[in-house]
Length: 187
Image 1 (spheres, rainbow, N blue to C red):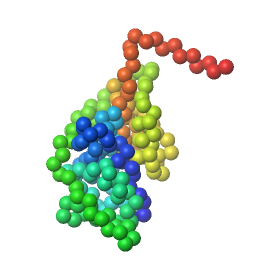
Image 2 (cartoon, helix red, strand yellow):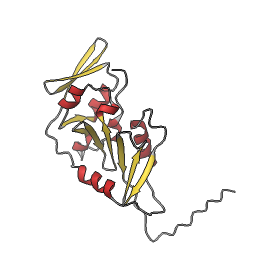
Image 3 (cartoon, rainbow, N blue to C red):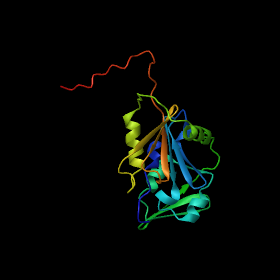
Image 4 (cartoon, rainbow, N blue to C red):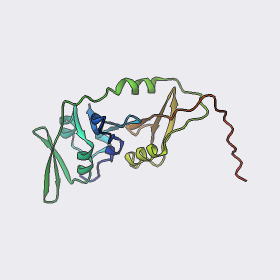
């Protein structure tokens, strides 16, 4: 493998009360990770060095965030007997993959966000840490900037129109009765 795996594990939850969110879900060649504040989606064919047969074998499977983190620097990754085989130099390790996780169905939420009309919201608040996580995951030649599209109540973040990766970022709640009177004069 010539390139590293993107750090998609950063978008997973580390909350023991939501153990399913500690996994990355792979569906039809797309990897999904969420911590309930953001959902990040990447096309494995375009953003990982995984071979096509490995991507196909991962369909409908779940990779724990800690496993994803450990396999990121592999020189080769194969799939056999429901396990990822990590190879780097003389080191070879086996990581079992899960099949029966009650992972949330994020597809309706993503579809609703993408199909929503553009919002005319003038002020949006979000956690900047989450944007930093998204920027690390999107690291590629296409990710020299991130773009935001405010659709309804959702913020879609993506590097370019053809990047085959995007994130749905959950905005922070604003109190509607608070007037917007920020003083932009810095003098």
